[in-house]
Structure formats: C-alpha cells, structure tokens
Length: 262
Image (cartoon, rainbow, N blue to C red; front, side):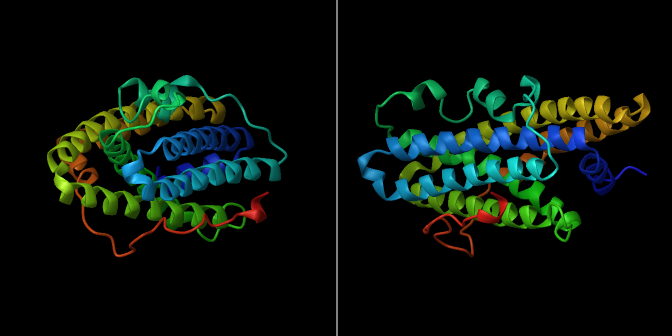
C-alpha cells in the first residue's frame, strides 16, 4: 500500500535516493540562505529593524543546508548535482515570484514594495515547508538517523512562517493591504504549479533510482495531480490568509546552533 510514510521510508533506506533527496533539499536551503542574506544587506533604511530578522532567516536556511550535508556525510555520501527540473527555488524565480537574483546581486537598496514582495513569497513558500516538515515530524521525529534534524528544521520553519504573518500584518496595517493581497495570491497560484512540476520530476528521478514500476509511478503521479487540482481549486487560500501568530517576534534572536550536525 502506498502511503507518505512508506514512500519516504523507501527513499531514506536507499543510499542513492537518500543522497538525491538530501542534495535537492540542501541546494534549496543554501539558495534561500543566500537570498535572505542579500535582502538583509539591502533593506531600506526605513525598515532597518527588519534586517536582523531577515539575516536570522538566512542563517537558519544555511544551517538547514549544512544539516542535510551532514546527514549525507554520516553515510559516507557526497552531494550530487541537483537536476534543474527539481530546483524549486530557481523555477519560482523564473516565474517572477519573489525578488529577482539580478536585483539582489546589485548593491542598491531595496524599497518597501520589494520587502513586501519578499515577505509574500516567504509566507507562501514557508507554508509549504512547514507543512512538509509537520508530515516528516509525524513519521520520523523519533528516527535515530534523521529524527533530530527533522525536529530542528520543523521548529525553524514554524518560526519563519510566524514571522512572515506578523510582518505582513504590520505592513497591512500601514496601508499596504491591497498590494499584499494581490501579491500573495499571485505567489500562491504560481507556487502550487511549480510544486506540482517539481514533485513530478523528483518522483521520476526517485523512480529510476529505486526501480519503481510504471504502475507505481503512475499512481504517485495521479496523487500529485490530484493534490494540485485541489490546491488550484481551493487549497491555495490556506497559503494567503494572515493571522497574528501565538509566537510573536519569532526571529527576534540569534539562530539556534546545530553544532552536532557539523
């Protein structure tokens, strides 16, 4: 019987699929770390109080990349090149979601609108990340190999999501509500499509590594398409709502270290 737990267990139990999974995850986290680091450097003077929080976000993402690399090293594995069709971050940028890397490479201060675009992009993608980590935590929180990493990353993703809610509500109260609403919806619609395409590509690569039958892959692909259909119809709304989080100022301190992962 196919289930999320059995699927991920199969991937984790096989060195090559585990290596690919960790390489894709590490690449995305490291890219996110770079993006947040650049945004923190370019924050406009009027929003200087946000810079340490954005930097903390970037430090967390860098830490996650190191954790995935460390998980591979523990098995004596080295990262593999990430197939372009599985590069979630790059594909979102190509669809115009978030801040363009060309802009981030320039040493020109961002404007308030840029910061709102960044926060909307983060609110949508962090919802996806937080949801995925909730699922992994449910099944693997006590796993001797990956449990500690899953718990740590999940807690960080929850903080990131809380931070985006709080900051976007602050900007909405300052009169930017319509921009936030439009940007969140555009981000969510694009993200669910990219997530579908990346999921199909990742499953295709995993299927080749693990020797899945055509029937098994077809069933998994059907599930991915069904999820996309639901999200396109109504599920995207969950990614655009804003509410004040219970955990306020979630990124107000230093990043939690992960020295044990090397």
